[in-house]
Image 1 (cartoon, helix red, strand yellow):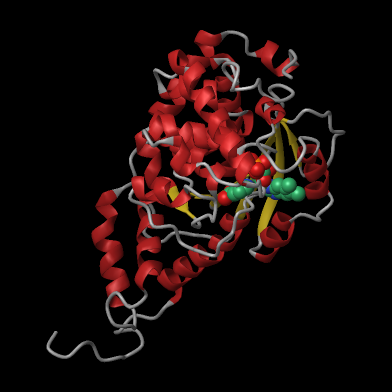
Image 2 (spheres, rainbow, N blue to C red):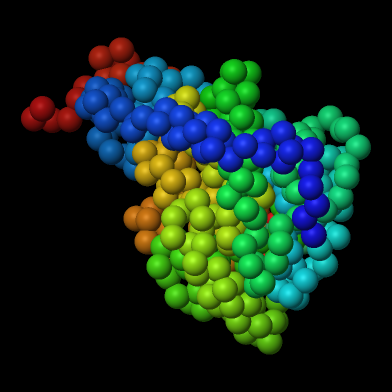
Amino acid sequence: MTKPSSLRNLFSDTPSMQKQFQTLIDAVQPVDGTLTEAAQAHLDDLTKPRGSLGRLEEIALQFVRATGCLKPVLTKKKICCFAGDHGVAIEGVSAFPAEVTPQMVYNMLSGGAAINVLASHSGADLDVVDMGVNHDFPETEGLVQRKVGRGTRNIAEGPAMTEAETLIALMAGAGIALSAHEAGYHLLGTGEMGIANTTPATALYAVLLGIAPETIAGRGTGIDDQRLEHKKTVIRRAIEINQLHCGTPLGTLAALGGFEIAGIAGFILGAASVRLPVVVDGFISTAGAVAAMKLCPASSGYLFFSHLSNEQGHRTVMESQGVRPILDLDLRLGEGTGGALAMHVIEGAIRIYNEMATFSSACVAGKEGE
Ligand SMILES: Cc1cc2ncn([C@H]3O[C@H](COP(=O)(O)O)[C@@H](O)[C@H]3O)c2cc1C
Ligand SMILES: O=C(O)c1cccnc1
């Protein structure tokens, strides 16, 4: 499926790409834990019993630590939906044909997809990023062109991408986050579109987290029992055939990932390098996040896991990371939909932190005995 692309030719110098990528990773600093005490004291001084806003308080603390700012601003939000095709679609692992990837990109560009509605509902701007769709799109507003190839190779037969292609996709994602930072965004969200991409996501989890793939392989777009068994076989074959390439997180991402998944991982690393928090969507976006955290553990503090996907396996993955996602709405769509919804909650938490009165400013008596 993959053909040479102009982008790939531009960056064919792998050592220099590796150097650039290392510079990006080195720029990611751990979140600022020294602010926790002051931020907690502020939360405790607001006119409410201590801790009564539960996870909103935790979210506000995390946002302060991530941004390194005791008075954080959160008004401008952007969701980037990364799109890519997958060679493994030919194995019949999805309930839908691969043509749906470009068709859904067009749908997003004309405003008709779920993510258009929910991004607009949460006041977030939306860009669709062509990381590797097997179709040439005309220049369109809202479409960011970063095509690395026209779909990955079939992971059941060998590596999805070369390490060079993976570095290009990672750096493209990082560049998009850096541009968003320059444009003044305060919070980013991930999304994805790519028929068959629950298959590489599952294979990545299995290898990066050491989880048996059959326990986390799910129905994706709605495959039946027979196709699910076949999908598990395909994933097992992909892991086996790519074993030699999976010695490092980068090698694993290249062998078993996808252009949009690598784009998401890079997007997260780019955002983390400039202390820009990212809301991670569901099952596939989380695979990009896990890859980012394996490549650079310090990036984890910048991530808000938006929701628990209904896709089989997401709970196991979240538990393995010690994460309790913000929402649990039985969503299993992707595109960034869960992230868009969780932005409401995060924005609510920051408004609470910034706008509530304190006991002294509102002349409210404190807890008896204190
Ligand atoms: C119409 C349509 C819209 C979507 N929006 C997101 N996905 C989601 O489903 C796909 C992954 O599931 P699988 O691995 O089973 O193919 C991805 O494109 C994901 O974004 C969609 C899928 C379809 C069919
Ligand atoms: O949770 C998700 O993101 C998801 C689940 C199934 C299919 N597509 C996306």
